[in-house]
Image: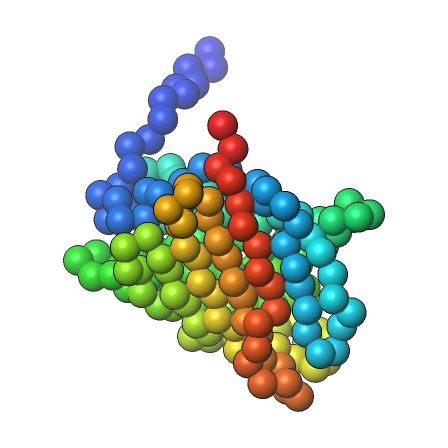
Length: 170
């Protein structure tokens, strides 16, 4: 006899209440823009999905696509943790490029400011190597989510790389 499957939504862990505004699925409402001195400028669309299973962790998956060709581009997945009793937040991220990183920062209201805490990469990653990433998520007064990502590599200083806004999916 098979065990019955329960499909009840898990209650959000209290440690994550300050981040509840992130939960759900977000779609870019217009193409975002990417640029960096070593690549041609590009436009992209992206879907963000933030979920939880009751643990003090938010699960996430980010999927980006080329705005014109619709070909898959960047993928990131991982976990968000919050140090209980503080505004300290950590993103643990695995990227399809072979980069794994920990970004840490602070939550102020409905804005997350994160920067590289640790980086690792596969042994055959493409050069120049990423050395630092900063990321800002902000829930705007109009209900849109904005993300700005800056990056530094072996041969380029920290500068804006990506900017995009999203609308929450129903």
